[in-house]
Length: 625
Image (tube, rainbow, N blue to C red):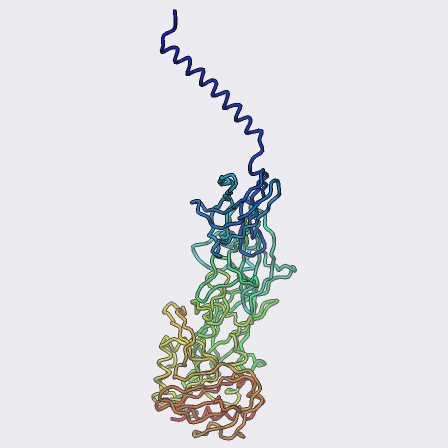
């Protein structure tokens, strides 16, 4: 009896499937035994074409089983061609090497991303996309210093201070990506006072490191000098890209743009002794309060008048460690002026200026019926004071467009005296004292706040003895009004009254401006000229040069006046051999504005009778209406 038709059909289909399966097996085995069309293909998995010498190109190596006309292209994730690497004949079994540097066929740079290689074999009419990819990566890893200190403290931005009372190193905490090649380094730079320079490292860090201790020692083992430091952590990814916690310039030094702090919290301040003086004048006989940071060392202090270093007016008794020092301003000295407070530890010394008003004003007295007010540039002192307020490792100074706290340790040039004070204000005020000129004294900080002596109190002259780089608009308006009303304003500094800054009620300096084309009184000043020059009396309608020979020799730096403002009338001037006016007096309203334009003048007063006579005449004009 024969099988039903349906069953016979099922048997036939099953037999056909068995035959097909065995056939496919034998075909597959045959293909496996044949050599691949592409042989010995190797590709670099990543590269970073940023011209830093590390993995700047991606290599692909291969052989062909059969000679062919080949087009080798780099294609993006969508399969679109980016760059043609080969378009021509390739011999069989010939090792072929090609380098892709990240460029496109249009000559540009391909964006970061994942790419593959596509082979088009024209003789065989085949196209093969090699599945192994290459990553173009030029993005540096993100590295950030998050905090420094014995404990993590990110809520209150501030610098870490070394040495600390416990004698422990500062612990730098940072975040850097981990990977197959997490090479890390640390470098420390000193950013102020002075030019930025590397002082430690670069030193290798363990691959898994997230902290680094620094004990304040430099690469050569010496203790770090006082100043501001920034810790820069570097990490390199597998593509060779280097990321740093602070941007570095081509010289490998930390850099930033105007008005921008450093990223992160990599700042360390090394301080062995620091003093914070009052920024407003203290009246003679009253107490002035100073902040002292001696790192808990014992210190002593002494007080002398500027220009009289050998005459100590007051001194401490036993050494102490007090953080707040209160001193009575000498009541026996009825003159106004500047005193120097010197604080000493066993190994350090710091001096800071102390502005003291006379116990009675000079105006309206028999000795000085027409008073002169000296306004000291405390705003500029702190504006150029290289102190890191927020712990980023960058000194906060107005020159960088950064806000500045007014109440802070006075570092100055490193000895406590404001930058430029020893060459500017100090010798000029000492000369006025030596020649028995009696004056009232204040600071522009007090003037802007409306405290202490004011220009409207009856003074005839105002002397600005140093560089006034920045001035609060309120003080600027008061100076202009004073001159228009008939007063005499004399500027002994240079690059002055061209920039403003806002002094807030919380004693911060914010929103510093760039230098304007003209100064407060409308004059356009030239850049400082550094070359030997002799100035000659050219015009004198007010006896500004009386008692001189009409020439000022031995000068090496001048600031010429290029033009006066609208409504100003020149009444006296000395000129260079090429007729550039330098010592210039101009009528401003009913008053007078005198610009000396000689940064070397104060220091030369003791040796130049001509310059001393000039100052004498300025004083006379400052007391006349």
